[in-house]
Length: 283
Ligand code: PAF
Image (cartoon, rainbow, N blue to C red; front, top):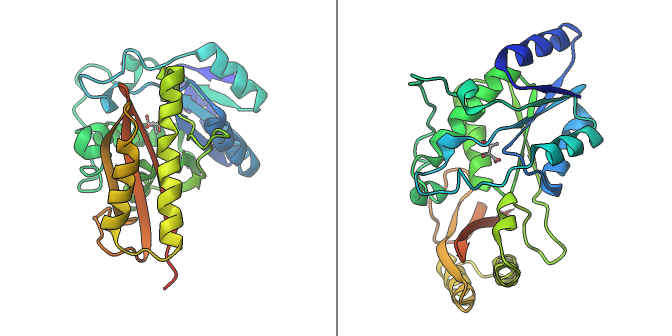
């Protein structure tokens, strides 16, 4: 497995692979890899000749009071895991390599990036879209793999690829959960044992909502209230948002119909966790 820290080396190796007609799969990550990332890597491994994992904690997607400095990092462990999963290359640049002084260009997917998480974290999706565009340009993958846990990110990146005519197929991969239902996230490592228990209210209230919807509830407000009520019962949990939106436009809906996304962001103590489920209502 190659570990490349520079754009130049990465491009050179990829150029050689492309000359051999290799198909490339990219798994963009911020490291501290868990089973969710492993599922993306395995999916990429199945369908591509070469698999590149990028490991880069991207400063531009963190707000000034967010956890960029404390974001968990363990490159050695990540590299061991990638090696085991037969990754061909890790791209692991320094911040200065990705953002030299006097970088003025960014990529913004308006509207979609300003709602839900974008409302609480202004500039977050601009940072994500900018770094993902740069990674796409550096690695030139045929396919790129993203987890459905970050539903809004996935929707935005699909739109970015469509709007900019990038010849890259975006492959969504299902959320991986602990046995107790908690969606895997690198940020789960911040949770104390008490907070881990409290965090279970997120998947449990999503399950409850799902059940009610599958039993015929069509009023979004009823589902939202039910979720608020449930989550508010847990003293360590503070709701950022519970939103029921159209899964393409991310506009809030009143009646549950069509392709729907139920997305939540909840602080457990100081840790902000997100989760969601999506479904397509029968016409
Ligand atoms: O989902 C993530 O880990 C990040 O947002 C991504 C896509 C790697 C961009 O930094």
